[in-house]
Image (cartoon, rainbow, N blue to C red; front, side, top):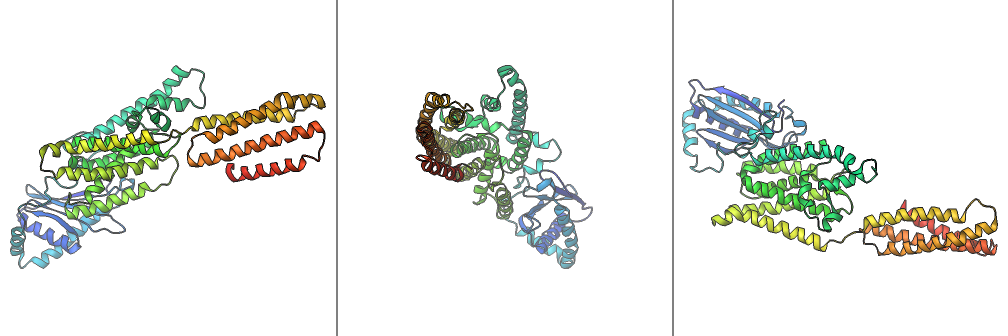
Length: 499
């Protein structure tokens, strides 16, 4: 089995005295016999794509003339789980070599005539060519360190991987150093959150309060090593497919634009969560690729193979399942990428050189600024932190009231004084809290919960006031039905909204 980010299998066939055109004619016939889609054929080689099946979502099989040899390669088009091809590429080559024997028998009487007819039928300008194949970037991923080595047609992607990795190392060190420098011995439950904010992670409250730069910085920040590693692997895969097609500067701009937009989607969707990571921008690149594959930007055979493999990869990863995954950012990146992909296609087809060179970047910038501006201006500023602080205050006050009304003292006057001097003022505080709860701006679910909690607090106030009257008047029967009814209402509300 072949492995790697782009698994492939290569064999070299020495031609010796065999005519190269004749051998390509045999390969052509063999690929047709297998039902493969041929995207390119000429004197220098051939490119074909295997059909889609349950076992495979297409491989690219190419043959190139190198001196007096034919180099035949089968390479996976789509992303492969566990970085292995499960023997698919070897199987393709074995089938091809076996079929050549059949083709040779079929064409033995008129091989030269068939070869001449094929070569005469080759159009002057084919959509594909061997010097610029659809997977030119992926072909450079050979060797363990190849994904992080910049080279022609693959420059920005490895630099992004290096930058993200270096930033992760620095932020990991910061998590060790900053608590000792800034917080010393005062490390609390919110220390990690404070450090995340210092380092530039994304958060709704901070962004809507003017710290829009977090939409950019959070693209290059990751929570843990596996988070970084998985994102960088997929970045290498999709970057190797489209960087050279978009051009390095367009590719970089598209990565940043979709990254910022996906960060804004995260801000819009989440109320208090801290978010970060390059995955939104990576899904943006997939969106761009899907958009381009929806056009004639790629040759038909290559387009079909890439479209299915990309759709499968995106479909598996976009499913909103799993804790700690920012699905909003993924969806936002994919959607914005698809729109920017059509903008890129429009730009590439412009005759005006200025528009062709700058139109894509300018249009992407305009879209990004417009979307972020809309989010900052029109998204509500939720008061989740204030709400959570008030609930904590309620818990403390409730405990104090409980002590005021159910203290251990057996002296009636002491207990009555406790209710009147401390308990009832605390009950008045609870009433104010109930009013505050109803006025908070909160996400729908939390608002619903807050309104239920306000009702419960008001019921508690009634409960304690009746308890005070019952104790003061020493009449156990007068207020007990009301007390029991309020207790039942509280239990129903707690069961329905708070459990």
